[in-house]
Image (cartoon, rainbow, N blue to C red; front, side, top):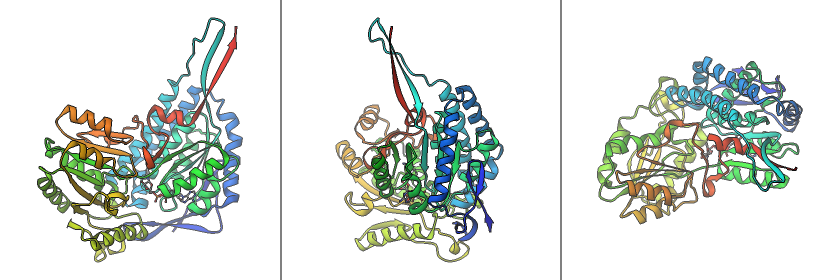
Length: 476
Ligand code: NAD
């Protein structure tokens, strides 16, 4: 089994204890990474602090050049990165290749965005010159989950580095390998040692030591609401800003006039992509009662034609990330069964045959889900779609907004008025009409309403999250 080191101050770090990384397609151990604790985190934060004095002063054009070079190296190694991502997460290879492409795009995009990111001047009166400028926070801490390790790495690191921050990132213990690889690529691209440090380990130890460290200036966290609360408290204790990108229970809302030929693949992909382990998964289907039966039938057929298999075979549906995650999904289904759930198809783990050693399950469709039930409210984080019919637009809005979350929503209609009304009334950070997810557009600001979090990443907004504005006032 391969031993992989952490990256601190441009050098490898190893620890006596390690964290074993499994291939979810086979259950096989594929690597061990350092089990970092407070001492290793302290080294990484100190390295970032030392590097930050110089990196913040590097000319914009030179910072942008380094980011572009990182993007090129990711392109160069795209196949390797995609294989590694597919192996450690179980996601189909095609998806992992796409993730690698988007990862590279983030660095290109933030290089360009940085070059056109200006402050402003404020014409208060004739005797004063007033201007604003953006300055980095200093040392930024980044904690990311296992579902899109490369993409989320780039989404949070590229804008932070662009604005002149120096970073310490902790990837999830389940899938740290591509983050480590990207850390080395950044050094190869000419990023100064210490500007980006990657520390591995468990959340309760490495993650807590990083987010509670006394010398960080900002936290960017992507993960569950539960851990988000802990992180928010750590930030509050030190009065530093945090960006929280948390979970979702996002609805796809299909109206009676929708083009079902477009809606069906959109709805199916929104829940099966990454085996439903996507923060913005379309895990609720709200459907007008007049097209309810026909839509459920179409989705059942689509689920029946799904290929399930190991990530590197490039199926439609790979495994879940771990045995623990699959057991969690199964326990939701058990409870739903106990409450008389109408499981149209799926609902089981795949325990036998060649897939038996991995963490696979069937795509699952549950009809007539009560909006206030566990299945209607909780983030399941698996390939499980909960269907609830509605009678009119008012009820659709009420159902769409009827959970604690507000990350993303999809609306399927041919009526322009319905589309705009839904965009206005649904409480979510992104609302899509007749599409879902916008193919990973790095340009689109992303983030939650309600308990899906606060702050925004992606797009030009992402740069602002990693900077603070200063106002200069000069009396003439
Ligand atoms: P998680 O919250 O369990 O873990 C996320 C990260 O936090 C991991 O690196 C983990 O090691 C670390 N962590 C755990 N406990 C910690 C602690 N006490 N202190 C500091 N760090 C700690 O989430 P997960 O299971 O890895 O990911 C799934 C969740 O992430 C889902 O809820 C999903 O919706 C959410 N997510 C959100 C977005 C978004 O952009 N909104 C994107 C992807 C995933």
